[in-house]
Length: 121
Image (cartoon, rainbow, N blue to C red; front, top):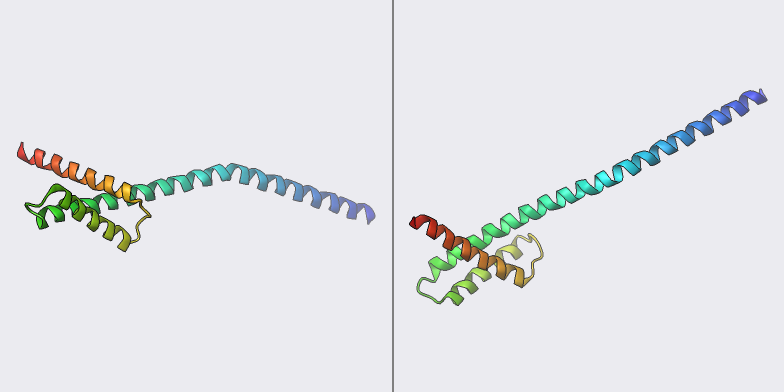
């Protein structure tokens, strides 16, 4: 009986050791995969947010061009920036610095000019 108890104890300890080793190996294998998966999700969300910001900026540029026909470029830029800033804040898309948004508005004007050049051809 005593031998049987010792044998059961040895077997149970061996099983627990093997299960523990397998769990550690599984975690070591999955940890980098989970990190990579999270990075891919973050990258996808960033791309989505940047696309939304681009659309809002383009809409702001078009709105400024329509509303402020004949106004100075600076007034149009400020109106487009104001619109894009309001929309980004309203929908709480992402925390943007004013400089980033100003750069996005400038790029929006460049895209508009390229579309106009493409339409003229």
